Length: 299
Ligand SMILES: Nc1nc2c(ncn2[C@@H]2O[C@H](COP(=O)(O)OP(=O)(O)O)[C@@H](O)[C@H]2O)c(=O)[nH]1
Ligand SMILES: [Mg+2]
Ligand SMILES: [Zn+2]
Image 1 (cartoon, helix red, strand yellow):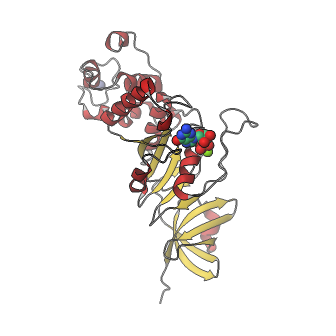
Image 2 (image 1 turned 180 degrees about the vertical axis):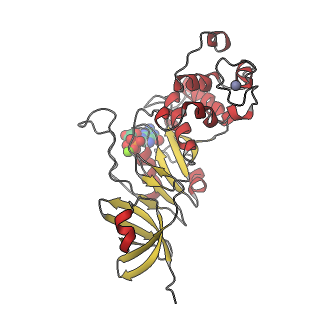
């Protein structure tokens, strides 16, 4: 004789306080871990749990389901998708930073989508720039969307990207992450950007909150950052696996690093213009390589 367990999602965890959203009731509860999992487990926003409602606002957590992944900054688990928010202007587009994000998120199994925000600011040369990068990333195999949180342009495309997923918004400071979230959910959150007081490069890790967004979908803001070091998360020789267009080519050596190896099909594709020079340059920078003869291939 067992009570039927109800499924919930941890939407926020602040110190020992765990907030659980129960989709079946469309309501938030305070989660209390039962007995032994209380001591041994750390809870993350994103955790999928099972348990029962024991009081008006209290949910007894009996079980945490196995996590698909755990991101450290910010601490959130089971992330299905990352909306990588970038801009051409204000701030200027930093393709290397985007390439780093794509590698790191692909590695942990979050499907990245590239969203260019602030397209309302673009005309002439800047618009051409947007189209150039859009083509580069689409050719590489990513979904690319153009939006403006100011005018609402392109927002009709977003719900289908989020549906059924736990999604986070990532990207540098100032690109409009919080504005997009506000436009989408009406929620105004204080997600602190890089703490200026605590020095450059530090991230504040408080305040991750998943916002329920339709059926079984959740969205979270993340703090902005200006630098990501892929080699902290991914082994150097695994980096090429996360330049997804490289994986379409078969080099002579299975473990080809696509730098100076003979019979490298990736460099061949680069020479033929099938792989973008910008992406390849990011790759070299990421693995801390330099090629003198690249100048002859990529002007
Ligand atoms: N022109 C324009 N400005 C925007 C747009 N989205 C956000 N902003 C502005 O960009 C600034 C940074 O936005 P914010 O949402 O705080 O960026 P975050 O640091 O990524 O969270 C704010 O002044 C916003 O009003 C947009 O689509 N177009
Ligand atoms: Mg913000
Ligand atoms: Zn190769």
